[in-house]
Amino acid sequence: MSNYKKYNAVIFDLDGTLLDTLEDLTDAVNHTMHKFNYPKHTLEEVRSFVGNGIKVLIERSLKDGLDTPNFENILDEFRQYYTANCRVKTQPYPGIMELLEKLYESGYKLSIVSNKNQAAVTELNNIYFSKYISIAIGNSKNIRQKPAPDTTLKAMEEMDCTKDMCVYVGDSEVDIETAKNAGLDCVSVSWGFREKNLLEKLNPDSVIDSPKELLRYLL
Image (tube, rainbow, N blue to C red; front, side):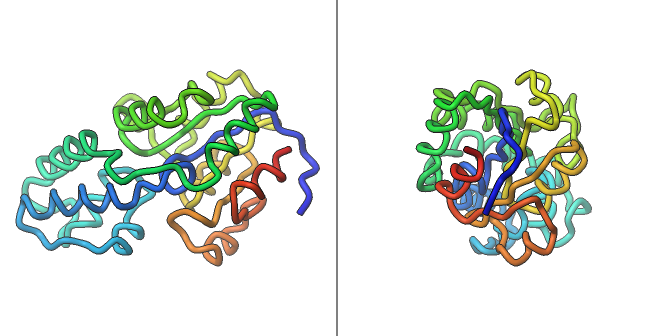
């Protein structure tokens, strides 16, 4: 695999790309479902629900979705519980810390853009990645979330980089659409929340199978 374009900036998705958050997300969903007397979900079910932010995650977790009585209270319970318990089982994927270190040492500008709520994004970045990443943008009320390009464009502005020198790295169809909407090249990673064959059908610029392979692609 060859990469003929030299980038100087990378925007990373968080869940399913840098961090394996699925077990903590599943536990938070099931805590919330149990508290409000709704059926719990398996890890694989929650895997299929994630990608569009926590409101959509809870909507998909409930049979009646947004029409569920007390939906906002259910969402608020999930938000509070997950923010307080977002790193019980969460860990960076194998090879991610080495990837970030090498990119940082090579002069890359690095940022995170996530549909996770801003408080959790800030906390997780501070814990795991702040040595290499200072820009970590999550979901907040004053900006549209992915796949709208707003948070991605904000990250580019803060990194002071141009579209032709920046690449977006994510693990889902939402990330591919986000990169397209922002006018960026997109690399999809197959170790996250979506199957490789699904990603390939969506035609990102490349599909990568390991952090080491991504490092070779970028350097």
